[in-house]
Amino acid sequence: PLTELGVNPTIRLQFNRPLAPDSSSLDFAFAEVVPPGTMMGATVEADVQLHGALLIIRPKTQLRHGQEYSFGGAEFRDANGSRYTLMKQTFRTPATLSARIDPATPRLLAGNAPLVLDGRGSQAIGSTVVAHRWRQVSGPPVTFGSSTAPTTSVALAGGSGSGMVTVELEVVNAEGEFATGRLQLGAVADPTQPHVWMTGGASPRLLTDADGVIASALRTSPANGVTVAASSPGSMTLIQLWTGSRPVAVGAYEDAIAGPGLPGTDQNGIQITGCAFLGGRFDILEIETDAQGALVRFAADVEQQCSSIGGAQTIMTAVRINSAAPVLR
Image (cartoon, rainbow, N blue to C red; front, side, top):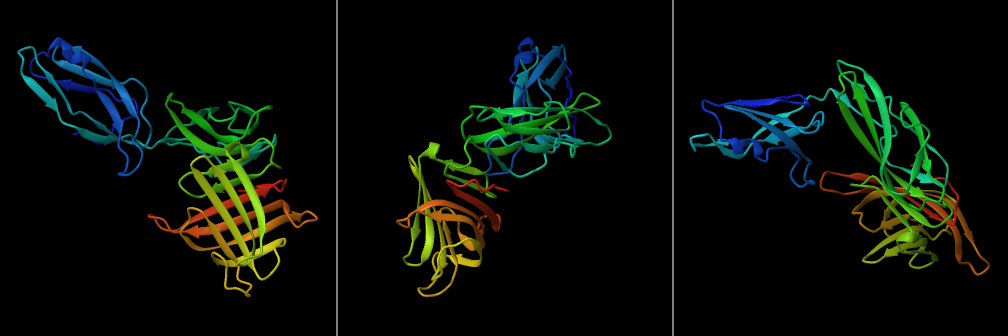
C-alpha cells in the first residue's frame, strides 16, 4: 500500500513474469483527491517504462506538495495473456514547500495605483527557498515591479480594461522542487466609474458598467436609503442600504437588520442579493446629489454576516458611484 510519496515519485511494479509489450502504453495517471462537492482536481499524466517484468511509472510533471492523490485502477496482462489489476490506492505528498502571498485575501487594483505583494511568508521545511517567480494567469494585463524578487508590486498596465485578475507566485527550493500560490484581484481601470467589489464568499466579485448597467437612486419609501442595482444579461445584484427616518448622510451605521426598519424609526437596514442575512453594519463615505435631489456621487462600505452551509460568512461589499474614495479591502 502507498502512504506517502515525494512530489517526483518513482513507482516500480515487479512481476513474476514479463509483461506484454503493450503494457507500457497504458494510460496511468495521478489524480488529485478533493472533498465531495468541490470542483474536480487536476490530473497528472504518467510516464510508463517497461523492462521485462518491471514496470516503472513516474509523473510527467511534478505533483503538488501536501496533496492527496489516487493512483491505479488499471488492467494489464503478462506475456502469457494472464490479466492483472492494479487496485486504486491513495497517497499524500509531503507538505514541505508552500508559496504564500500576502495579502492572502483578494484586493482591488484601482487605476494605475500599485499593490504590494509579499512572498516572504513562503516556506521550505528542511530546505531553503532559492527562487521566487511572479506571473499573471488571467485577466486584464498587469505589470510587476519585479518578476523574481520575494516582494513585488502589481499594477494595471496602461490601456487595460476592468475585470478579475489572477496572479501566481512560484517558489523553488534548493532541490529544484516548486510550489505555487494564487491570488485573485479585482481591477478597475477608472476607479471613479461605478463599480461594486464583493469579497468574503466562495470567490470575489467585481461588477462594473462593462458587465451591464449600474443604476443608483435615493429612496424615501418605505424608509430613507440608497438602492444600487447592477444588472447584466441573466443576472441582477441589488444593494439596498436603509437609514430609517434619518436622511442618508456620511457616517457609520451600526446594528443593521435585514431590509428596512419599521416606519418612523431610526433602524438601519441592509439588503443585498444572495445573502441570508444574520447581521451587519455599513459606512457611508461620500454622498452628493444634484439640484433635483438625484444621486450623482456615492461611496459606501458594507460588512454583513451571511448564513452558509459551512457556517456564518463575513461578506465585504464596496460600492462606488462616480467616487474616488479608495477601496481598502
